[in-house]
Image (cartoon, rainbow, N blue to C red; front, top):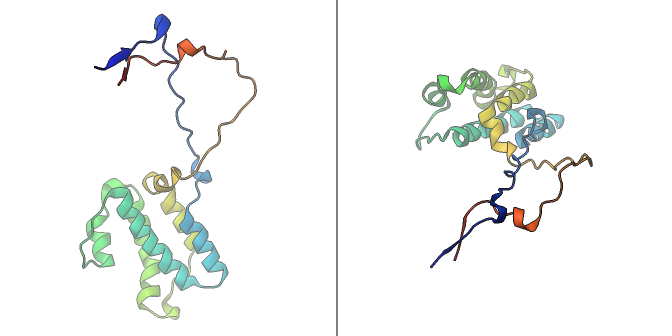
Length: 164
């Protein structure tokens, strides 16, 4: 039979601290670093192609989108990007404007704009940024001026707990 453990003195310890949050500027988005490296090597087409496919995959993850086996990029823009996604449909549409000439045209057709700025705008949106936020550990800051007294062993129980 299970017994309930009741805290002594009827006190509950304070709730656990909230997990630390990360400012958007502190979130490391791997595709941004990869694009910067690829562009530094002079490979604009490779940077655009890699980043575009990464954005599509991240949109699927962030919004739980399930694409059919045979889908086109224009179909994706038309059917899968929705108004409730905020500015992402417009940003991804602009990105497709860079991708399409790289994928289907010649170098003369390429629209050279600031790819990194556009990607930064896309990954500033919370659903996409959130895919990477959990990966960033934030160490607790110790100011050294703690005024809390250490808890006694009998203060650590947090209400009834089942003991098997």
